[in-house]
Length: 139
Image (cartoon, rainbow, N blue to C red; front, side, top):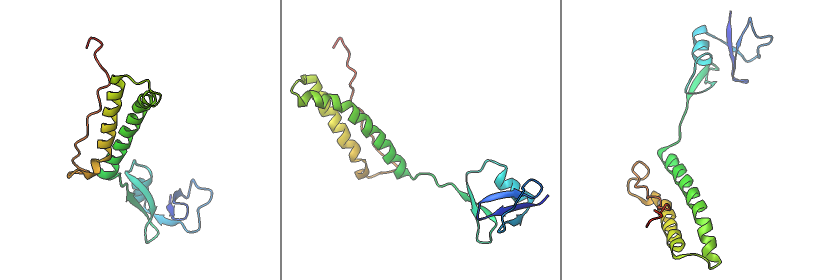
């Protein structure tokens, strides 16, 4: 059996199993075929400069991207928690506790938006604590 790789299709072919092989396909060794096309790899396969397949390692998100994703998730939670409190304020029916809770969520959201200004960003972030909206009924 012979093994081939086509940069045009970014596909591997075995002559005995493939009814047609692209014209640009180059013969590759069984070992390279096995390494790139029959195992789990961390990356993608693409054509190298010589037309042979090469492994292009996965590049994960940066520390900054991960931090900003977390910030955005937390901002979404804050926005959902704030909406009914803001509604109560807007229509003039907020209790003192609701007004205080809204202020706490606004402060939390402001601090989330400032994480990029921290000295250790993005590796060391002092994440703000989420406001405690669950109050003991007996208090």
